[in-house]
Amino acid sequence: MPRTRPRPKRYMRKLAARKPCVHGATGIELRPHQVVLRPLVTEKGTHQSTRYNSYTFMVNPLANKEQIKVAVEELFNVRVDKVRTQNRKGKKVRFRNIMSQQATWKKAIVTLNSEDRIEFF
Figure 1 (cartoon, rainbow, N blue to C red):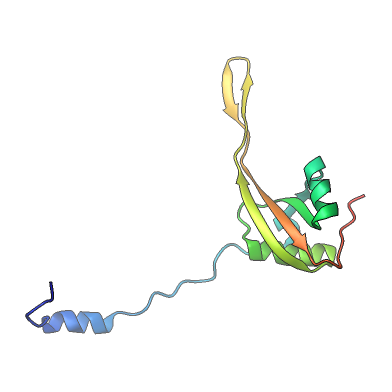
Figure 2 (figure 1 turned 90 degrees about the horizontal axis):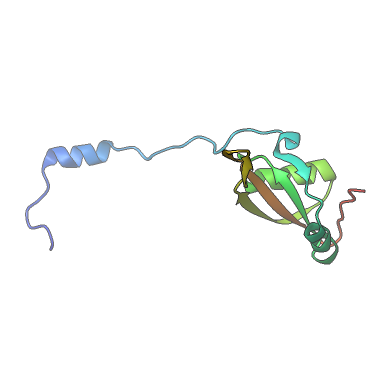
């Protein structure tokens, strides 16, 4: 239903005094060796690296896709096409009668340019 009476002047002054919200830079500043923690060398990862030129890494949970891309490019001197990330939940473990949980971690699958390769061995 449309409003029939005009808005009060104080409301219009308040509206005019509003400033747009300005946020700072996103995330925490991490160095490349702090972003990429270690490569994940598994059977599935080896298959992806040979067939799709994709490599998997364990990364810092605070890192975003842009930071991961820059870190891999800087550490391995390659060109990154795409980064996919997963937040992996820690497994439940039992020691005697105590139930606990392993730490959650972040996994990144990095697809490289077709001309670039990373040699882990």
